Length: 390
Ligand code: FDA
Image (cartoon, rainbow, N blue to C red; front, side, top):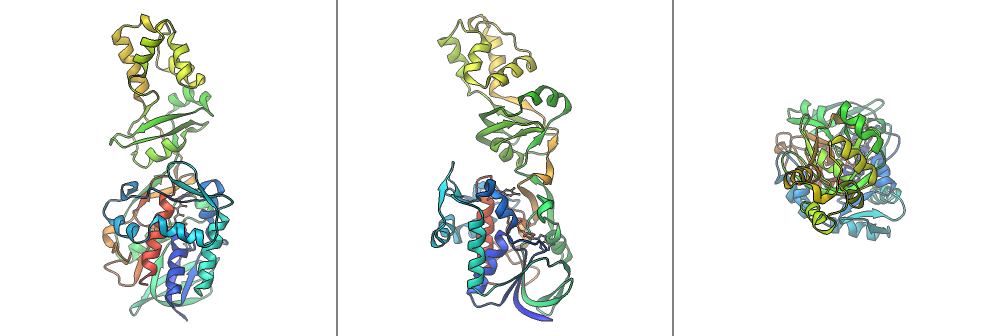
């Protein structure tokens, strides 16, 4: 049996960061991954340019049943630390919107950077390694793959969430947590497009391709000002992806298509204009057509509406609400909500408090960030923290 100080399962964002940090401390580190490529999600991320962090990382941008959990790691390894690493590797990047940082060239730059950091720290990486069994061995662990058995003092689980099974996502980390008696919170797809109820699909499908800025609001009052995109399958765009993480099946979602008060301004400024013409100057024309039919709005000059009618129209446009049929699920979701309960882990080291020397980093745990580089920042921060102690 080969002996290692540290075995990291998962050569993704969190696993590679953890491995490089542990290697720098002189630990003999082995990374095992069942995939045939390193960092596959990184390569796909941000449309191939990897939105690797955000200028405005703050704890409120993370969903977790234990909301204070993220604070320590995010404060110890910040977005500025990761940006310094990116600068050290001379990777050019830019801010796209809302503090989101993307590579100018390709997400491959980030994978190459992590691999280089691992190489310089003497880390070994083995791909196509199917893990068959993990067991306690003294104070450490035994890990058996198809062909080999390894022992280690510290075991780091960095196997990510369930989204995109086609590129290697698996429930391995959850099952391993359960094997060692740790609680796993129910999982569901996050940052994911909505599908529609059949009746909504019929009226909204012709809008595929229409995009507009809105404020999306979930039933718990969470709001995101971003773009809404109508697709052939349902609703997408950043506003929808963001609010999907706060949505539960059966709930409604509200979209502010027009800011409150805008219609009253229209009545004052253009009283002779018909509603349809006036709305066509505020919103995409195809959407206006669909809304008039769908919401049964009578078209006439703005001055001819009674205050009550105007209030009803205003209500429809400032709080356009529908009940999604569901989500597109893990097939297209960017992240998985839920996972290993952080109450079971140390917020400083990511070690399972009940199982010494067993660590969980990255998305496998119940920490999910907003869209915009937050999920990678969690992978870097949690991986770095574990890397200091494993
Ligand atoms: P990650 O999923 O990166 O790595 C897990 C690794 O474990 C994989 O290499 C996998 O093969 C391996 N593994 C799984 N099961 C195993 C098993 N049984 N045995 C061995 N190995 C196993 N976030 C962000 O901040 N900015 C962005 O731009 C994007 N964009 C984006 C696009 C798309 C299409 C997706 C699907 C996701 C994003 N994300 C994102 C989310 C981000 O990719 C995600 O949160 C991180 O990759 C999580 O990092 P981890 O290291 O935890 O898991």
